Image (cartoon, rainbow, N blue to C red; front, side, top):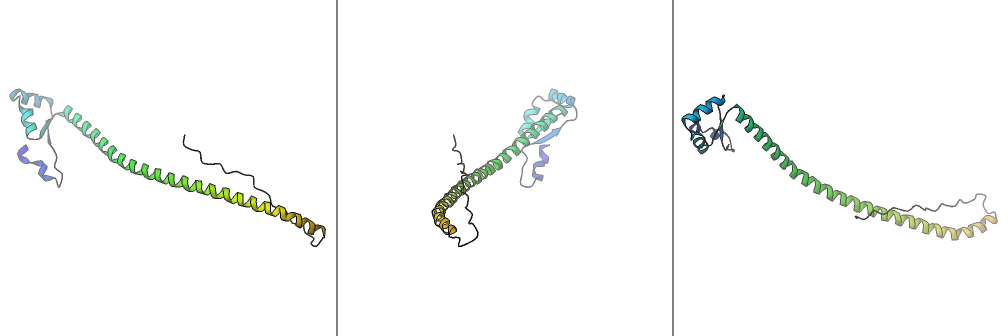
Length: 154
């Protein structure tokens, strides 16, 4: 079987072994009775002897190995995406914090301007008492809402 060199038929990837399927357990048993070194000889030629039961075990092992291989490749992708997500979250939280700081500054600026308006209001009240104009000037409302800080990591 090894003389046929099945592995030469594959482009770029060489199988490590060829599986020789024996359709009955008794065939392998009879062959081993005649030649006890058959397994050693086959393995030296990169040939695995497989009966129905051992072929199922081989296929199961290959399937599990393939699953592990795919998982390990996906794990690398997951690590890359997790690092990207981590970076995006850091940037988002930083921008979110900066927005909160700017919002707080805007509220403080508004309330500061409102304080200036209140001092100006005393003069406006005097003008209203002179009845120079008919309409009353409404007072703006102060903003008492506080921006919650981003909690620190504990």
